[in-house]
Amino acid sequence: MYAIVEMAGQQFKVAKDQKVYVHRLQTEEGKKVTFDNVLLLDDGKNVTIGAPAIDGAAVEAKVIKHLRGDKVIVFHKKRRKGYRKKNGHRQSLTEIVIESIVAKGAKKSKVAEPKKAAPKKEAAAKVEAPKAEAPKKAAPKKSAKADDLKKIEGIGPKIASTLVEAGIATFADLAKSTPEKISEIISEVRGNHVTDTWPAQAKLAADGKWDELKKWQDELDGGKA
Image (tube, rainbow, N blue to C red; front, side):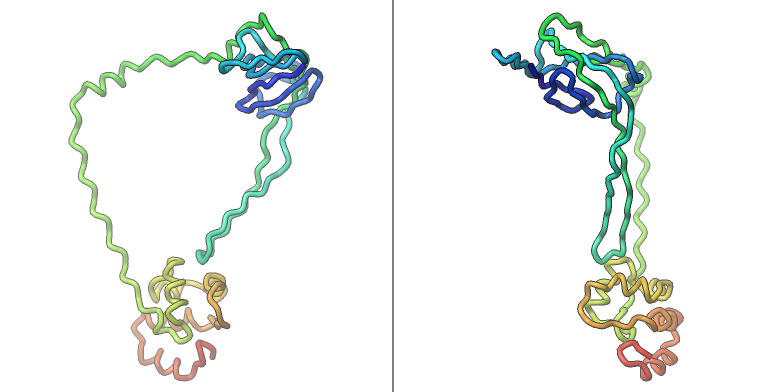
C-alpha cells in the first residue's frame, strides 16, 4: 500500500516504514505528526484519487531528527560588469519515518486549517478617510555628462563603450579605477590591451592638463610607456 501525500509544501509517494526528508517541521524529535492532505491511495487492489484530497485519509509519521542538507553553491555573474557573487546554502530538513497509512476515519489536523485574521478596524477607518494629496516627486537629478574616453591613449570605441556599460563614463571615474580592474572589465574585448597608464592619463584629463597629457601621449605606444 502506498499514498501520495503533501508534506511541508511538497508531494511525496510514501509507504509504511519508509524514511522521508522534508522541509523543516516545527515538531520536536521523537514526536508523531499526521499529514491529512492525501491526494491518492493505492491498497494493491483499488486506487482512490482525491478531489483534491481524500476525506478521512491520513499518513502518520514519527520525527527522527532535524538536520541540514548538503551545501549548494549559488554563483551570480554579470558579463562586462565586473560583478561576481558567490554564496553557499544548506536547506534545513527533517527526517521522518512513515508509521502508518490510514484510509478512513482520520481526524483533520488543526494545524492544516489556519484561522483567518479578522480585519483591523484601523484599516477600515483609513479607507473611509479622504485621501491626502500625494507629495510631488522630486525631479530626478541629471547624470553627469560622459567624457570622450577615446582621448586616452590605447582606448578605442569598443573599449570606451564597454567601460561606460560598467559604470566608468568620465575621466574622473577612470582615474579612480585600477589597471587590474579595468583589465577585468574589458576582458571580453578582443586584442592585447595595456591598461597601466590609463588611470594616470585620465587624472590629467580630469584636471584639464591637456598639454601635459598630449606631451606624454606622444611618448606612449598604444597606452604603453
